[in-house]
Image 1 (cartoon, rainbow, N blue to C red):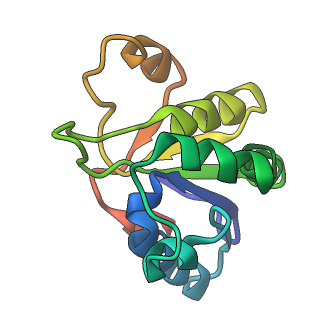
Image 2: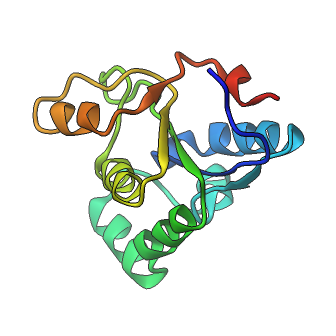
Length: 145
């Protein structure tokens, strides 16, 4: 698989993967790509923003307009990279926001990369498969030129 060099890539995924987002962002930048990550991963890493309270998540997403801000990063990108590690006993977890982001990317004609295969979740498996994501099997070397 040949990957365009010097791509602009938006990283997507659950904020429980904030540490991995920053590590992968650093790696991709070191090899020449421009990378966007979700807003405020440092706040999750520091514990300032806690995971798990849906009402607090709604408040933050509304107050900081996080969905629209991330969508605008996707608009400026060549591709998205979804970090879909295992979570909540789901292999290759893709949550609501990441599913939306895949849809945004698909409609915009952006390449969609998934770190792992599409999760076996009935209510969106066929939609994700129909977007023809590239499954990386946790191999980021495809981004090296």
